[in-house]
Length: 301
Image 1 (cartoon, rainbow, N blue to C red):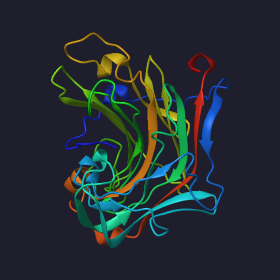
Image 2 (cartoon, helix red, strand yellow; image 1 turned 45 degrees about the vertical axis):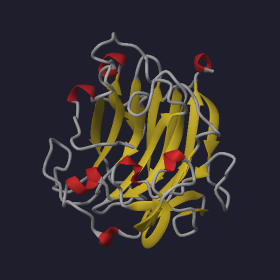
Image 3 (tube, rainbow, N blue to C red; image 1 turned 90 degrees about the vertical axis):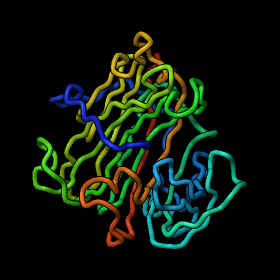
Protein backbone atom coordinates (compact mmCIF):
# COMPACT_ATOMS: atom_id res chain seq x y z
CA UNK A 1 0.00 0.00 0.00
CA UNK A 2 1.52 3.23 -1.14
CA UNK A 3 3.50 5.12 1.47
CA UNK A 4 4.18 7.97 1.33
CA UNK A 5 1.95 9.16 -1.51
CA UNK A 6 2.00 12.93 -1.68
CA UNK A 7 1.90 13.20 -5.47
CA UNK A 8 1.25 10.38 -7.92
CA UNK A 9 3.42 10.43 -11.01
CA UNK A 10 0.92 9.01 -13.48
CA UNK A 11 3.10 7.79 -16.31
CA UNK A 12 1.09 7.94 -19.50
CA UNK A 13 3.85 6.05 -21.30
CA UNK A 14 2.93 3.00 -19.25
CA UNK A 15 -0.69 2.92 -20.36
CA UNK A 16 -1.73 0.18 -22.77
CA UNK A 17 -4.54 0.59 -25.25
CA UNK A 18 -6.10 -2.70 -26.23
CA UNK A 19 -7.63 -5.76 -24.60
CA UNK A 20 -5.37 -8.60 -23.53
CA UNK A 21 -6.33 -12.22 -24.08
CA UNK A 22 -5.78 -14.53 -21.10
CA UNK A 23 -3.05 -17.11 -21.47
CA UNK A 24 -4.02 -20.75 -21.09
CA UNK A 25 -0.71 -21.94 -19.62
CA UNK A 26 -1.11 -20.58 -16.09
CA UNK A 27 -1.24 -23.14 -13.27
CA UNK A 28 -3.13 -22.29 -10.08
CA UNK A 29 -0.74 -22.56 -7.10
CA UNK A 30 -2.74 -20.90 -4.30
CA UNK A 31 -6.22 -19.50 -3.80
CA UNK A 32 -8.90 -18.56 -1.32
CA UNK A 33 -12.51 -18.59 -2.50
CA UNK A 34 -13.81 -17.39 0.91
CA UNK A 35 -16.56 -20.01 0.89
CA UNK A 36 -16.49 -20.78 4.60
CA UNK A 37 -17.82 -18.95 7.63
CA UNK A 38 -14.49 -17.79 9.06
CA UNK A 39 -11.11 -16.60 7.85
CA UNK A 40 -8.77 -19.47 6.96
CA UNK A 41 -5.89 -18.75 9.31
CA UNK A 42 -3.71 -21.40 7.68
CA UNK A 43 -3.52 -18.88 4.82
CA UNK A 44 -3.96 -15.48 6.47
CA UNK A 45 -3.06 -13.61 9.64
CA UNK A 46 -5.34 -10.76 10.77
CA UNK A 47 -3.55 -7.53 11.63
CA UNK A 48 -4.09 -6.00 15.08
CA UNK A 49 -2.43 -2.60 15.46
CA UNK A 50 -2.77 1.18 15.40
CA UNK A 51 0.39 1.79 13.40
CA UNK A 52 -1.22 3.91 10.70
CA UNK A 53 0.47 1.96 7.90
CA UNK A 54 3.31 4.46 7.69
CA UNK A 55 0.81 6.89 6.12
CA UNK A 56 -0.82 8.51 9.17
CA UNK A 57 -3.95 6.47 8.49
CA UNK A 58 -6.61 6.95 11.14
CA UNK A 59 -7.86 3.40 11.62
CA UNK A 60 -6.68 0.74 14.03
CA UNK A 61 -6.81 -2.78 12.64
CA UNK A 62 -8.89 -5.14 14.76
CA UNK A 63 -9.77 -8.81 14.47
CA UNK A 64 -13.46 -8.56 15.32
CA UNK A 65 -16.69 -9.62 13.59
CA UNK A 66 -17.53 -5.97 12.97
CA UNK A 67 -14.32 -5.33 11.00
CA UNK A 68 -13.33 -8.72 9.54
CA UNK A 69 -15.63 -11.55 8.52
CA UNK A 70 -16.26 -14.21 5.90
CA UNK A 71 -19.88 -14.57 4.90
CA UNK A 72 -22.00 -15.26 1.83
CA UNK A 73 -18.93 -16.44 -0.08
CA UNK A 74 -16.86 -13.29 0.40
CA UNK A 75 -14.28 -11.71 2.67
CA UNK A 76 -15.65 -8.52 4.23
CA UNK A 77 -13.36 -5.82 5.64
CA UNK A 78 -15.34 -3.00 7.23
CA UNK A 79 -14.21 0.40 8.51
CA UNK A 80 -16.33 1.72 11.36
CA UNK A 81 -16.23 4.52 13.91
CA UNK A 82 -15.19 2.85 17.17
CA UNK A 83 -12.54 3.70 19.75
CA UNK A 84 -9.90 0.99 19.40
CA UNK A 85 -6.56 0.31 21.09
CA UNK A 86 -3.50 -1.26 19.51
CA UNK A 87 0.28 -1.23 19.37
CA UNK A 88 1.92 1.87 17.92
CA UNK A 89 4.66 -0.02 16.07
CA UNK A 90 3.42 -3.33 14.63
CA UNK A 91 6.79 -3.97 12.94
CA UNK A 92 8.39 -4.37 16.40
CA UNK A 93 6.02 -7.20 17.38
CA UNK A 94 2.90 -7.49 19.54
CA UNK A 95 4.39 -5.77 22.58
CA UNK A 96 5.24 -2.14 23.02
CA UNK A 97 3.51 1.19 23.52
CA UNK A 98 -0.23 1.33 22.83
CA UNK A 99 -2.39 4.06 21.35
CA UNK A 100 -6.08 4.56 20.70
CA UNK A 101 -7.75 5.36 17.41
CA UNK A 102 -11.23 6.65 16.68
CA UNK A 103 -11.83 4.13 13.87
CA UNK A 104 -11.43 0.40 13.37
CA UNK A 105 -11.04 -1.66 10.22
CA UNK A 106 -9.71 -4.98 8.87
CA UNK A 107 -6.47 -6.17 7.29
CA UNK A 108 -5.13 -9.64 6.49
CA UNK A 109 -1.67 -10.80 5.35
CA UNK A 110 -0.12 -14.05 4.12
CA UNK A 111 3.37 -13.26 5.47
CA UNK A 112 4.96 -16.33 7.06
CA UNK A 113 2.31 -18.58 5.50
CA UNK A 114 2.53 -18.02 1.78
CA UNK A 115 4.77 -16.04 -0.56
CA UNK A 116 5.88 -16.47 -4.14
CA UNK A 117 8.28 -15.12 -6.75
CA UNK A 118 6.68 -14.23 -10.07
CA UNK A 119 3.26 -15.21 -11.37
CA UNK A 120 -0.23 -13.80 -11.74
CA UNK A 121 -2.22 -12.65 -8.73
CA UNK A 122 -5.83 -11.66 -9.26
CA UNK A 123 -8.82 -10.90 -7.09
CA UNK A 124 -12.49 -10.23 -7.69
CA UNK A 125 -13.49 -7.44 -5.36
CA UNK A 126 -15.96 -4.66 -4.69
CA UNK A 127 -14.50 -1.51 -3.17
CA UNK A 128 -16.27 1.19 -1.13
CA UNK A 129 -16.41 4.91 -1.84
CA UNK A 130 -16.47 8.07 0.23
CA UNK A 131 -13.90 10.66 1.28
CA UNK A 132 -11.23 8.85 3.29
CA UNK A 133 -11.92 5.28 2.11
CA UNK A 134 -8.68 3.64 0.93
CA UNK A 135 -9.01 -0.07 0.02
CA UNK A 136 -5.95 -1.92 -1.25
CA UNK A 137 -4.69 -5.28 -2.46
CA UNK A 138 -0.91 -5.27 -2.55
CA UNK A 139 2.34 -7.18 -2.06
CA UNK A 140 5.38 -6.70 0.14
CA UNK A 141 8.67 -8.64 0.20
CA UNK A 142 8.66 -11.68 2.47
CA UNK A 143 12.18 -10.75 3.56
CA UNK A 144 13.84 -7.34 3.29
CA UNK A 145 16.67 -8.75 1.20
CA UNK A 146 17.71 -5.35 -0.13
CA UNK A 147 16.97 -3.40 3.07
CA UNK A 148 14.00 -1.62 4.62
CA UNK A 149 11.24 0.11 2.68
CA UNK A 150 11.47 1.11 -0.12
CA UNK A 151 14.74 -0.66 -0.93
CA UNK A 152 13.13 -4.12 -1.16
CA UNK A 153 10.16 -2.92 -3.20
CA UNK A 154 6.38 -2.88 -3.03
CA UNK A 155 3.79 -3.90 -5.65
CA UNK A 156 0.31 -2.36 -5.39
CA UNK A 157 -2.27 -4.35 -7.37
CA UNK A 158 -5.32 -2.27 -6.49
CA UNK A 159 -5.80 1.04 -4.74
CA UNK A 160 -8.67 3.47 -4.84
CA UNK A 161 -9.14 6.58 -2.74
CA UNK A 162 -12.25 8.65 -2.12
CA UNK A 163 -14.35 7.03 -4.85
CA UNK A 164 -17.28 9.27 -5.71
CA UNK A 165 -15.76 12.36 -4.10
CA UNK A 166 -15.27 15.56 -6.14
CA UNK A 167 -12.35 15.27 -8.53
CA UNK A 168 -10.78 17.81 -10.90
CA UNK A 169 -10.73 16.52 -14.49
CA UNK A 170 -7.52 14.67 -15.38
CA UNK A 171 -7.66 13.50 -18.97
CA UNK A 172 -10.37 10.87 -19.33
CA UNK A 173 -10.31 10.07 -15.62
CA UNK A 174 -12.73 12.02 -13.44
CA UNK A 175 -14.38 13.43 -16.54
CA UNK A 176 -17.69 13.74 -14.69
CA UNK A 177 -16.10 15.55 -11.76
CA UNK A 178 -16.20 12.54 -9.44
CA UNK A 179 -13.30 10.31 -8.40
CA UNK A 180 -13.44 7.07 -10.39
CA UNK A 181 -9.85 5.84 -10.75
CA UNK A 182 -8.09 2.63 -9.81
CA UNK A 183 -4.32 2.84 -9.34
CA UNK A 184 -1.48 0.37 -9.88
CA UNK A 185 1.92 1.29 -8.45
CA UNK A 186 5.38 0.02 -7.64
CA UNK A 187 7.65 1.56 -5.00
CA UNK A 188 11.42 1.18 -4.88
CA UNK A 189 14.69 2.96 -4.02
CA UNK A 190 15.87 5.34 -6.70
CA UNK A 191 19.52 5.55 -5.70
CA UNK A 192 22.13 4.26 -3.26
CA UNK A 193 20.75 6.46 -0.46
CA UNK A 194 17.42 4.62 -0.55
CA UNK A 195 15.46 7.66 -1.76
CA UNK A 196 11.88 6.68 -2.55
CA UNK A 197 10.71 6.51 -6.15
CA UNK A 198 7.54 5.12 -7.67
CA UNK A 199 5.96 4.29 -10.98
CA UNK A 200 2.20 4.66 -10.99
CA UNK A 201 -0.67 4.60 -13.46
CA UNK A 202 -4.44 4.75 -13.24
CA UNK A 203 -7.50 3.88 -15.29
CA UNK A 204 -11.19 4.75 -14.91
CA UNK A 205 -13.20 2.22 -12.96
CA UNK A 206 -16.21 1.33 -15.14
CA UNK A 207 -19.67 0.89 -13.70
CA UNK A 208 -20.84 -2.68 -13.17
CA UNK A 209 -24.23 -4.02 -12.07
CA UNK A 210 -22.88 -5.51 -8.83
CA UNK A 211 -19.81 -3.32 -8.31
CA UNK A 212 -17.35 -6.22 -8.58
CA UNK A 213 -14.26 -6.09 -10.79
CA UNK A 214 -11.26 -8.36 -11.31
CA UNK A 215 -7.92 -6.74 -10.47
CA UNK A 216 -4.71 -8.49 -11.50
CA UNK A 217 -0.96 -8.21 -11.81
CA UNK A 218 1.31 -10.38 -13.92
CA UNK A 219 4.84 -10.25 -12.55
CA UNK A 220 7.94 -11.63 -14.25
CA UNK A 221 11.65 -10.73 -14.53
CA UNK A 222 10.79 -8.81 -17.69
CA UNK A 223 7.79 -6.74 -16.57
CA UNK A 224 5.06 -5.99 -14.03
CA UNK A 225 1.70 -5.62 -15.81
CA UNK A 226 -1.61 -4.40 -14.37
CA UNK A 227 -5.07 -5.49 -15.53
CA UNK A 228 -8.64 -4.43 -14.83
CA UNK A 229 -11.31 -6.92 -15.85
CA UNK A 230 -8.83 -8.67 -18.13
CA UNK A 231 -7.69 -5.50 -19.89
CA UNK A 232 -4.09 -4.36 -19.53
CA UNK A 233 -3.85 -0.73 -18.45
CA UNK A 234 -0.24 -0.33 -17.31
CA UNK A 235 3.15 -1.95 -17.70
CA UNK A 236 6.53 -1.35 -16.06
CA UNK A 237 9.86 -2.83 -17.11
CA UNK A 238 13.20 -3.05 -15.25
CA UNK A 239 14.45 0.16 -16.83
CA UNK A 240 11.49 1.94 -15.25
CA UNK A 241 12.49 0.95 -11.71
CA UNK A 242 16.27 0.81 -12.00
CA UNK A 243 18.39 2.73 -9.53
CA UNK A 244 20.08 5.82 -10.90
CA UNK A 245 23.50 4.41 -9.97
CA UNK A 246 22.95 0.91 -11.40
CA UNK A 247 22.00 -0.71 -14.70
CA UNK A 248 18.47 -2.07 -15.14
CA UNK A 249 17.82 -5.41 -13.45
CA UNK A 250 14.92 -7.38 -11.99
CA UNK A 251 15.97 -6.34 -8.46
CA UNK A 252 14.31 -5.61 -6.10
CA UNK A 253 11.32 -7.37 -7.70
CA UNK A 254 13.17 -10.68 -7.97
CA UNK A 255 12.43 -11.96 -4.48
CA UNK A 256 9.38 -13.70 -2.92
CA UNK A 257 6.52 -11.35 -2.00
CA UNK A 258 3.46 -11.96 0.19
CA UNK A 259 -0.09 -10.68 -0.20
CA UNK A 260 -1.98 -8.06 1.83
CA UNK A 261 -5.63 -6.99 1.69
CA UNK A 262 -6.79 -4.05 3.80
CA UNK A 263 -9.23 -1.19 4.10
CA UNK A 264 -7.67 1.99 5.47
CA UNK A 265 -9.54 5.13 6.48
CA UNK A 266 -7.81 8.45 6.10
CA UNK A 267 -4.10 9.00 5.68
CA UNK A 268 -1.84 11.42 3.86
CA UNK A 269 -2.95 10.46 0.34
CA UNK A 270 -6.78 10.42 0.64
CA UNK A 271 -6.83 13.41 2.99
CA UNK A 272 -4.77 15.55 0.62
CA UNK A 273 -6.96 15.13 -2.48
CA UNK A 274 -10.58 15.41 -3.66
CA UNK A 275 -12.70 17.00 -0.91
CA UNK A 276 -9.69 16.87 1.50
CA UNK A 277 -9.75 15.36 4.97
CA UNK A 278 -12.19 12.60 5.89
CA UNK A 279 -15.96 12.34 5.87
CA UNK A 280 -17.51 10.09 8.51
CA UNK A 281 -20.57 9.84 6.28
CA UNK A 282 -18.51 7.27 4.36
CA UNK A 283 -18.74 4.93 7.37
CA UNK A 284 -19.41 2.12 7.72
CA UNK A 285 -17.46 1.28 4.56
CA UNK A 286 -17.03 -2.33 3.42
CA UNK A 287 -14.59 -3.91 0.98
CA UNK A 288 -15.69 -7.32 -0.29
CA UNK A 289 -13.41 -9.90 -1.91
CA UNK A 290 -15.10 -12.77 -3.71
CA UNK A 291 -11.88 -14.68 -4.35
CA UNK A 292 -8.12 -14.29 -4.72
CA UNK A 293 -5.99 -16.61 -6.89
CA UNK A 294 -2.28 -16.95 -7.62
CA UNK A 295 -1.06 -18.75 -10.74
CA UNK A 296 2.36 -19.43 -12.16
CA UNK A 297 3.81 -20.59 -15.45
CA UNK A 298 5.72 -23.86 -15.53
CA UNK A 299 8.91 -21.85 -16.00
CA UNK A 300 8.20 -19.97 -12.76
CA UNK A 301 7.78 -23.07 -10.53
